[in-house]
Image (cartoon, rainbow, N blue to C red; front, side, top):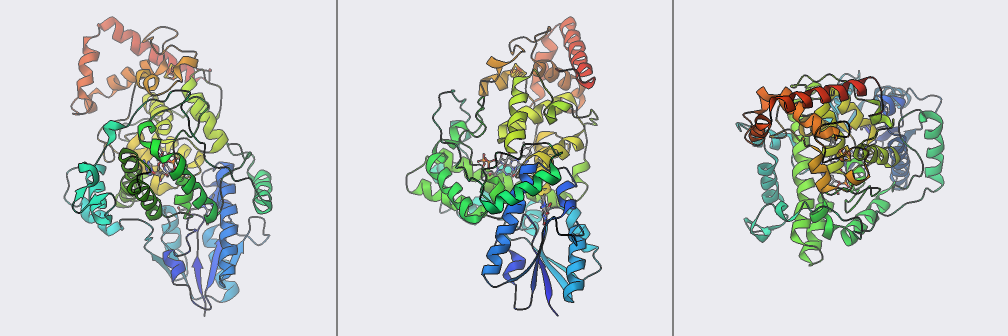
Length: 507
Ligand code: FAD
Ligand code: DLZ
Ligand code: SF4
């Protein structure tokens, strides 16, 4: 009796754990299903990217001689869920069981577990650390910090190592980074991959079915196969990696990408492996093509942050996305879905998210994330928003970034302090404030930058929790030095701003 081998939309790697074992007679199952596209209302570009990439991947598998049962979204027999499609294919082919590489989300792991068929879930070995390795590293530690885990991963992989010593004598070169960007900074945008006939067919399908989801489907210019993803990687290494480090925290009006790689959609869907991307960056450094602070900074994002986030997600369990230690409960305002706002930084970050299903890290953390945290938005709504709108978003990586790093809803498991700032930081790292209806220099009054008001209001509301935090506690001395009348004005103006925002006024 044949086995079914399930390949999910973010498992498009030819030597993935389950696919590697495919034998004569096995049937590979792939399915475009409404349940996956709508359990949160994914950005139309993300759905189109995955469906086009899945169709091409299925074609490649057939070319290699595999039997593939591929369900298109508009197949009249489509049951529209992954478990439903497995049951249908099992009945059709008399299959005795299912083999799958473990999905990246508890929801699907559990759904497969509950299937009335024998299902084997194999560890996903596209990562540097297994669940067991991360758990062993975390065991007994008072605090889990990315930096220590990252050093372990450097030692384990030998990436940027000289024997036991880090290349250049230091593990981390961030003090050479964090430069703001000038608007005339020269940079090469990521390559564009105009849609061919297959992608156009998918675009028409997505347009017909998901036009009511937030986000622009067109223009569509992401790569949808490994060949394109490899070109995107080579382009980044050649044109942008060298400047990646210095400018990784910079933000510029109408420049959605700066020197960022825009490789996360491809790595997360399986078209590129984290190993090969890190190796390509290390090789470019070894050949003298890029500076060390850029190569190290880039590798740290993947070998350090990406792995650390995955470790936390699987260590903490299915309940993690529901954490809310700050008890925030404000609804995410309509400006997150493109309603007009006078805050230029937010209109830039949300606008490019709408157009490209992409924003770079500092926009996600210090613009949309920072504002939601300062405003006291419900972290679960914030989590669902990030999962919906970004082309690279899957819960294993999105939830620790949002619930943990960005919203401090896990109480400091991922980050040792809340990532909050006033307008000052945004002004230092971007050119947004110059084009804003608010004045970043105004701390109170009708023109005051809302980040300035909300920053102090947030710290004031959560004084009990943060006053003793060694990384942020000292800021209360500044608050205490203000006279009481000024503190009252800030509280009142912040409350007024939030009330107007809650009443759907354009703020
Ligand atoms: P680059 O800046 O070029 O970085 C290189 C690579 O490093 C990325 O491709 C990515 O694979 C990795 N990386 C960098 N930072 C992180 C990080 N914090 N966590 C994990 N990997 C990282 N990343 C996702 O892949 N999926 C998500 O759903 C996601 N949600 C996020 C939500 C919030 C609130 C925040 C603050 C960050 C989130 N990130 C997420 C992390 C980061 O913003 C993106 O990985 C990055 O912006 C992707 O763009 P890039 O490929 O141009 O990255
Ligand atoms: C994100 C996504 C979407 C939009 N659609 C599908 C799909 O139709 N079929 C599929 O196999 N996978 C899809 N995915 C990716 C899954 O949601 C992803 O595998 C899980 O969330 C686990 O990471
Ligand atoms: Fe954003 Fe404030 Fe600057 Fe306007 S002034 S762009 S709201 S930080």
